Image (cartoon, rainbow over all chains, first blue to last red; front, side):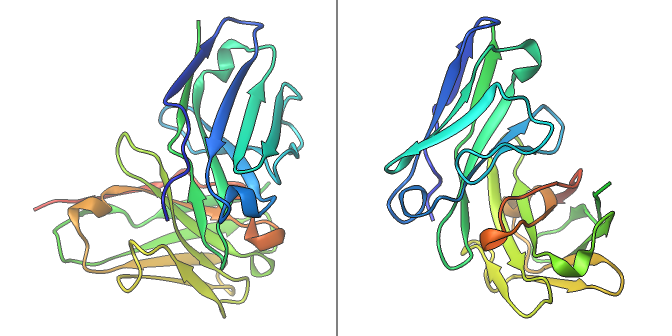
Length: 110
Length: 120
């Protein structure tokens, strides 16, 4: 299983919006609506931010939203805040109970 | 609240074995599939293994198949990962994560991780 492709880094000023892409294949992202996104601050465990493409767990700000088109999923952070600076990873179900993560994206708040 | 605590990591020589544990609390452990995910130093996340709620089904990443074994003891609310024939490329923080509903996704929550360092 090859890792899903994410941009190495994205950046934005406070209050702006940033979008992180996650590109896979028809065997993973394109084949299932089981894409999730995780936020990881340095030295910390990952935290679920979005699941099932666009569903937000309770407690996650509505500034975070997810979408998917074809083999590419996206995470958008609107109204960027300083605490959003972190690494973000997408994940997709890849069939037969196997799972693949993205390469990870560092979000920098300027 | 749901809590997962991993332990059992350490420094080990190549070719040796280790058993990692993950103690779960705050939810009905026997109702959920559980995952192991690892992260090499400075690298991204890699899914390692999944075990079904009752232990009857186990799935592995190709990179660990045949060397790692996932298991669970529902009477002790504990998840395990037996890691054998360790290689330097197995050096990573190993996280356990609770699986969700459909296809045992998403991974939520995660434990704090335990570091396995393979070095001679």
